[in-house]
Length: 412
Ligand code: C6P
Image (cartoon, rainbow, N blue to C red; front, side, top):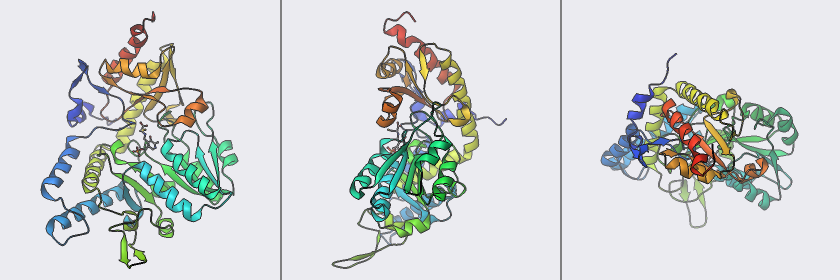
């Protein structure tokens, strides 16, 4: 088997080579954001020292170089998710902005009174609040697909909630809390049969598994660069060309116009119509370098490595009697995120105690309060893995975990 050489990979990430609170740093908060390899840091440095200018706006060499870098990055993203054309790739700030763009622009244009919008109960607030607003504005109806005992959405729930009244289904490919990989192929097929369009929130999936938007037949697919080794402030909205063409612009301003008159304007073709204002070129350059890095290693190998880490961590965690793991136990139905609680200890304390052992994890409601309420949990602790994590990282985490209750004065 062609395994990842994680020791070599780790050398590319300068931030990981440090001690934290007197311990070897173990970074297990990749669901929140990921670290950058030197290749990404250098690509941004070279761009800033050789090619920086305002793209699409100047005839001078630096503007031309910036335009070329921006367009090259977009082409790289197109290949990465196998979109049909460049017109279907829009750069945004992040997943949140991509979803807001669709909810506002598509929602305002096409959602009518009594139309239904269907989400999963496990959605991140970024995939709830924009829909709540449009539903209020349009007097439409918001419905949720609930999870079964295993933390998944099953076929009955899909068929019960998605109906001929459904206009839009918006669902995460992978839950940021439970790690559940939702059956989005089934959701997309069924929603299309019912005449609805589907937005897939790929914030937690795109960094970890191979995504092919044409094979999935998703109408919109969105993700953030900073969760896949790229800088913060660059995100992607993929949309089918014919749908993007049918919706009005979201933000109005420079670079998204064709002609502007005193009282009206015509707009630029796709994708520029949705990219008002000066673009984040260095973010795009960083995203391209991140994709180069990931594909050079191989998304299949990254997925396999994370599966190994999850299996190893789950096995150890499930053997500790006071640790309660949330979400699917079946490895085929989950990605590299594990949420858990420890008997008698608040998740924030778990996180603070682990930090004192050099281990970075996240605790809280993970911007998914409706899910927490549904699970009847105030909060969870969460570990989330990436390609640079090792078996040793998990061993250090488990050792820290075993100390949490002792720290607070419990016998074990
Ligand atoms: N989840 C987490 O720790 P932005 O902030 O726009 O890059 O991503 C928002 C977002 C949307 N959908 C899902 C499924 C997400 O996980 C996130 C970000 C982080 O879980 C920060 S709250």
